[in-house]
Length: 232
Image 1 (cartoon, rainbow, N blue to C red):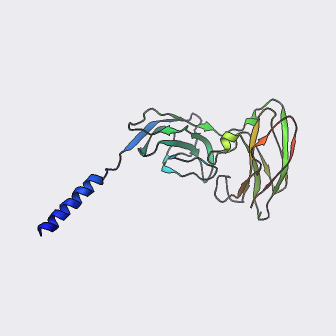
Image 2 (tube, rainbow, N blue to C red; image 1 turned 90 degrees about the horizontal axis):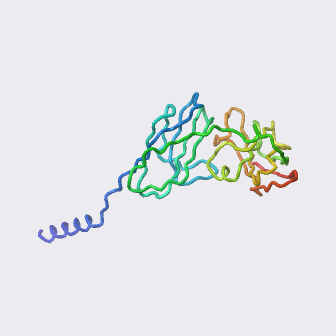
């Protein structure tokens, strides 16, 4: 009996030696600022990975509008991104924010303000010289809906499913397209999205999409033809 007691005591001591208390969370808080807010909600979360497609959303929460926010992040993570958007009905969005990498240390991070940026295309107000990008959208599985060709800056393209920041053109069905971009833009990335009937936004997982295989496209002083994209 004494042997069993000593054995249990030894096992308990070993367990206490190796057991580590879970690390408490770090709180990141501040204000969400968006003066153009009119409707919808604020979708807020953090992630360790930014990629084209649906991100890994941690701490996902919805706020009724701009104002104070608070996120809890485990101390285990060295670099995270805070993401927010003004979300409307279904997959509609009006504005977004993606933070630079944030290193999570031991202390809470206070007064980390989030300023949402309205979804806006560079070409909407552009007055300078332009060149034309053209090609064809192919899709053997197309059933209905419109095709949207989106032009991104490379930096914007690498992140999660953001709306295009340079230009966009809609087609009634797969076929030829052309779109203008600034002559001095440097490089662009192109994707094509099929938005089926009954779906409000290309952010929906119901929307087939494909990126141009030769992204990024280098823009020089001549029009670029032969940009063919196949949506499977």
